[in-house]
Amino acid sequence: MPKRVKSWNAAQVLKMNEETFMVEVLDMIKFSPDNGESDMSIALMKAKLDAIEEALQLRLHTKQGQ
Image (cartoon, rainbow, N blue to C red; front, side):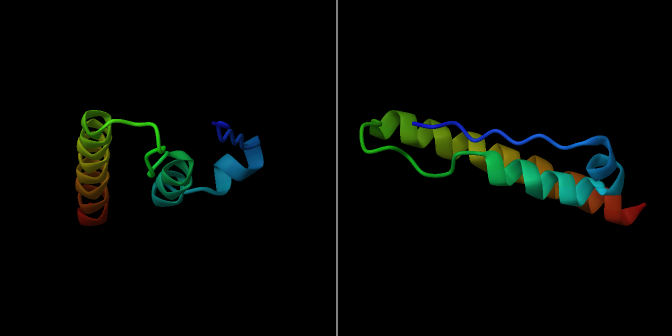
């Protein structure tokens, strides 16, 4: 499976706010299981993605409350 790699130059990083950066990172995360993956690995992937989503939501709500 090919890996997605993205890099940003200094000017792009300076223009980004935290929310934009998180969206860019989420675009890089694998969300779909491969055909060869077991039910256990799919459940583990879902648990990790749920934890990431919860952490991002908490961070965004904290940031918006400041």
